Image 1 (cartoon, rainbow, N blue to C red):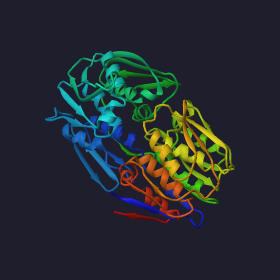
Image 2 (cartoon, rainbow, N blue to C red):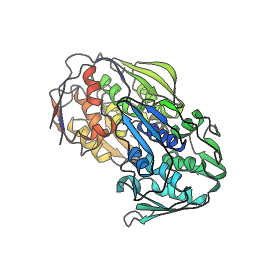
Image 3 (cartoon, rainbow, N blue to C red):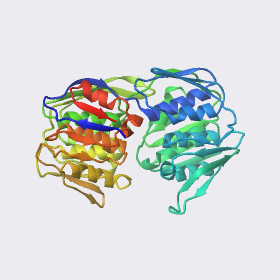
Image 4 (cartoon, rainbow, N blue to C red):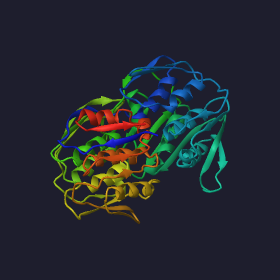
Length: 434
């Protein structure tokens, strides 16, 4: 397994790097391109492997990937075997919505932990509009379903659902199935959540409209136009680059083309809470999402942060990145709280912080993190193969007292292939060991 040896930064990090492309948007765009019947092209630099690409191939589509482009064309046809959504909940939810409206039976499989984490709400809302979808009962989690998930042909009708922001996979499934349903798909959220799908549909000129947390899509949609689109940057992953700029004093670090819709710019608010000096330069849109260049100038002024459930949802950034941000606030002894009661990797995050000598503990609302004087303690950071924990650990290690070893770092490649290269471009000294 690959390990990263991260050397303490002897000089401030400086420069700007491109944001990693948003894989969720790319998967949804790839699926919509497949539904156009003509050739559609996605452009993105550094896009990781997409489970949607293999899934569409099994559905009879032609998908070609060359350098910084992915092209898809053809028509959806009956698969000969189960379709694997791998570790992508976005892929599984979108495919469930699409396949529920097809005239043939199909079967979805994927990583058990991913399917169990969000497919029960997907099945619930699709059944509400008439879909025939069943999964294997999970003996350990009575309210969840486990793969394989079987989908039979059905006629889909109009529906109205209220969802929480944490049920974003169900929203994706509703919108994708709504393209084929007879009548309206009306979605009300308790607060605005992940908005990638609706922004992409609107950018393609499809009949969707929204007001605050309410959406309305009118189906069936006669046709979807082919397109050639650039993918916006992923703010959640970009936060790890900005975190490195906070961990190394006097740094000037920027990330270009970050997707910053109102529902997904909460990590900027979190940076602001910590007293970070930010420069945000708005630009155009990609796939309906506003993009901007973001810079962090020097260390934050130093304030404890309090990430509420609402801000945490808008932040998009992982619990690991937010906790690391709290740890580098330059006021020793200040205590921050990050509310995230649903994160499955709390233990991994706490162990990573402990490796650096950072005091942190679980709380009823999430975790509490106590900032400490720098430099951070050096050592071996065990990530348990968690990419979010590994990236946060690398950024923190740049401010450690001596070289740190981050183990099982190959997990980073699956989500942010250019992470190490981006930090090196800013001046970081990182060695990769097999």
